[in-house]
Image 1: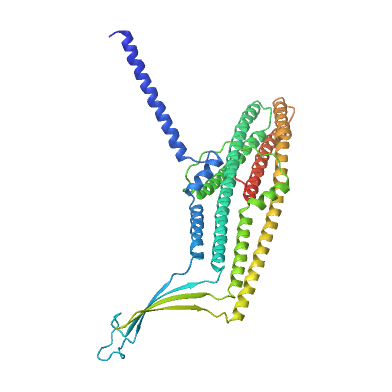
Image 2: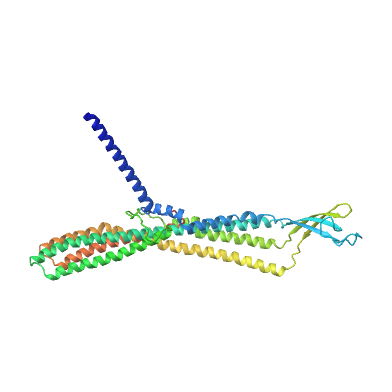
Length: 431
């Protein structure tokens, strides 16, 4: 066989193997993506919108409430009546009693339609529409609350994972220091206390790792609960934090909340419903009407038609005045609740705005100033310890300072973003 042909066959086999490997890799990536959601907050929120049962229930409840609008404004069903007059046939000698239409003395067929007083149907529809708007706002608020809980749990997952990573990196650093201590101890240059102390430091760090791992597992369980997954279902490791947006004035956040907050929208819809219900209660002072059309069919006689109009008499004024006072109180209560919600939101927005600004400033100081100083201090302490100019306590304290600074930086960065998540949730902004 020519060598060129052999080369072609080998090349084709290599191409097939490479293609198979690429397909396998792609399939593995797809499976991993399906099995491990959570590399980003956006992915988790999208997953929850599709799978969270509480969110689905809120949407269905809102849809069910909106279906009440049309029936509320509709006319009542008409009534059909059959009246058997002189069913004993007393006016028809020689005939026995009968309950069959046409066999009685006379049969009357009547259709009755009730007609509410002008404006009542429209007001009933407006009440139902306002209640549907409130239900929509409740569903929106449920979605915001779940998204906010996912955002907070995601950030706590990132925080706990970061703490585990920092502690393990610190363990590696201390293990390096341990080698230096043991080497100097073997040469008789440092006391045994240094060796014991460095090993105790390693044990303490491992205990801290176990606690951070517990917090990580707790955050994963909370995330999975919000995603309608089993508590120990695997999640992708969060790797980066989104940058904080530019600072905004407090008044701008409060203005956003007034326009878009689901809580304020819910209370405004409740107020609208109470106002329409009050107007409907006052409209009940006027009577409703009924129109009836009857066909009379006497046995052996000629048919005739009757037209009847009826209306109820609004006589019980005391009960009506009580219902009107109740409606007034409900409107006032809804107004007070809206004002209370607005005040509470404004106060909480102020707290969160201050927290975000403070924790952001702390993170910048820790990252740009304190951490470089701590790293330089550790380098100097390690060089001094190796040369015998500083004791081990100075070295281990320098290591602890770096650890505290890195953990404080992580906490400040996460706390600022946790505050931002809640702030956006209250203001009705998308996460």
